[in-house]
Length: 252
Image 1 (cartoon, helix red, strand yellow):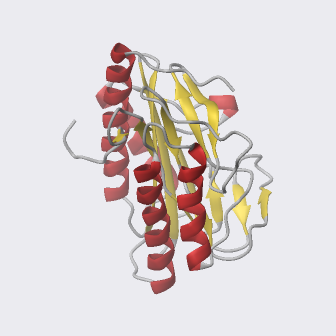
Image 2: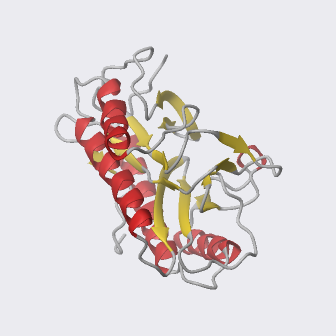
């Protein structure tokens, strides 16, 4: 496994791409309302990319037909936007990537639509908590398995399932998915020791029921049997604490 260490100049490029990705995702989340379609959200993402002069990373990636992955209810990830209006108590995960001169920012968040379901609130809170705890473990000298373990422990404690096949990933210039694979389950086969200059995306995915998933007929939507949550940040390993590159500030 070869993990590319970024130069100081490259890190600045990834920082800018991450800031823009976080800003656009924040705008998308503000527009999640009852009656809005996920195609509406995709159009907003396209307009925001034009505004910030960035390329939507996911559009045409291996043939994916949209700027965002919009995964509703039991769609775990890779949801293709549709014309179906969002309803109260739906739960939606939005995954957004942008490319700026080859530098990529990748981020995701899950929210409930116009409601306050205790089950959804607990699921989303656990997913977010696992991401925060995993980021805290991503320090120079630590093993990647500690990042995975932080996510797995939160899921286990709250009795949520984790899909084996999907997780986070390294990010290189012009390459959305590179080594290492950042499992949400403890994995010692590729137990990388973290070093300054590594950049990767951590993305917990929780399922309220069992871990069984299928690929939908459209070839993209990854569907579970019950509702799901997915959140993600792109981070930089530093000499000190890890740096979140995709913070959702309103100011870029």
